[in-house]
Image 1 (spheres, one colour):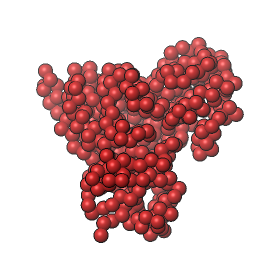
Image 2 (tube, rainbow, N blue to C red):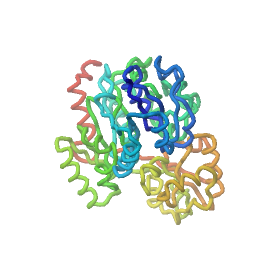
Image 3 (cartoon, rainbow, N blue to C red):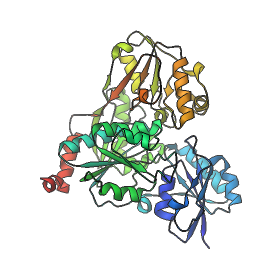
Image 4 (tube, rainbow, N blue to C red):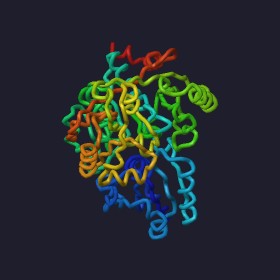
Length: 449
């Protein structure tokens, strides 16, 4: 008898786990996916063209709220949990619900789900959303490119649209963001790579994505995996870097799968030491020493710069931050907030009286966001809601703390300025030295000289 599988996901690892462990496996039948965390992704099907010959009708995707009923209705044997950045308490509540409904609760690990590249591969992960993983990936890419290497980045999936069309996506120009109809969340991750001059891939089928990246038309010497949330890599890593955040020093041991990502690390970066308290930095150092004593530890700062500080100085400002960092990342400040404080904002204006549409739902789901506005843009409706909220807000100016140019996709009718932040290694060991040693071990520089 085939075991009947339901995969709990959020449009990312769920599809990857299916592709790697179940797609062509006749011992199992995946009867459904459920979706959570991300708006506007329900009611879709995982299409037959991606699901393979065993699934000629595709696989339906339901709301996770229906999980208990689905287990009974679809005679589910095993429920595979497959999304990230969830507290252990919440994770085990889900396990209890599944077990009480009669099914097994399964967490899949790297052995079954990690693919092997033909190229050297560096992966970057984090213990929580918003640690600075993406800026670390960008810094790694810059340092590798400075050595003359052809670097291709692959980003953790964010397939929120047409799954069939998103099977393999290659981003080399800003026009590609339009070509693939990207959400704000996608643009925040892809745009910084594009403007730095490297190619980045993403999509749904990460076996096909990996092979395309290895054979990129512009060449590929090395691959950098730019992880999502606090997930562990989809690929086997030759060097794994985990970024931690001293503003949340204990979270690496309290959120899944961040602790997995930490324990896999060859290198751990303590980011944001320029804005965290000494007490929290020391607490995080001890956690790292106790959890992964063999890892190299790099201290790093995230210095911020602003396109026009005068837009902020003495003004009543609305601060817009990276959406996922404030929502399931649980942060109550970001680069925009730090910039507003650093450059002398008179007041941070609360956006909540001006919220419209789906942004109201976001604040209801995540009440801890407070006086900041997350750059939510998972579709046209959310983009419109964001634009209206910003333009009706009673503020003098807008501080944009997201990694992409928000003015490019919505019409902000108030003075605004962008905030930029990059990773800066401090002291020794540093990122440059770690990468130099890695390249020597891989004999990469000799191969291209």
